[in-house]
Length: 294
Figure 1 (tube, rainbow, N blue to C red):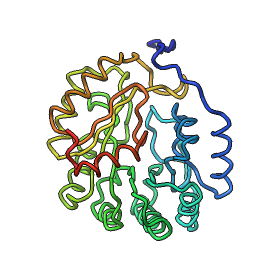
Figure 2 (cartoon, rainbow, N blue to C red):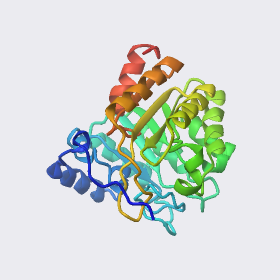
Figure 3 (cartoon, rainbow, N blue to C red):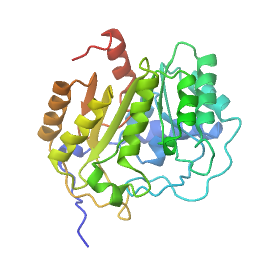
């Protein structure tokens, strides 16, 4: 069995703000809410919590899929909480959020994959915090167009669906997902609602070839994906997908430069970049430059 790369280089060493993490966690638990920040053991958690931002995780904290890079527990999920949209909006108000990011576990057990719960959360936030922009990070919903229509009709500002890795690694890293299907999801959203920004992201360090990285970037631009995030994979434990390499900052810079060249409205590429990291700043820059950053 291949050995996991373990020693972190200097550019990946980061202190955690445990006080901020504790305070945010206390608020979330009081409202029976979860965040992907905690579930995925994100290295930016302390920084984001200190800045009073978080990515809300709806539909419980147990996933029906078995992606090998993810720390969220797999198994049989609970019934969706009917009060979750109200609680989420309440937390957003208490935190005085200007940009609300909502994601979910994958719920293949639900007929619509949880799309209706996404829509309810979006509408509740819009009602209680009308000035806030809303970004959602959705699963593929098995390419159920009716489910995608449901979330689009709730009018979020950004719809994100992550490609996660190169297609050659899907069988090992995302065995219950399909690369083409994920592209189809993003393409359908953009064709149906060109006014909604589309976004995707992937990880590096799983053994991918740089040529394949450029290929998936080209695939995303062919379907007019607007925003891209690229970050370093950090395994949550030794039981998850094997980390093959730490990617040097200059490679991330080369990827970012290529993304600018091929026309992404915005691209963030770096070791600590994650799907919703600095999401408010990104959306603000795009909005104030009329979608013409590059």
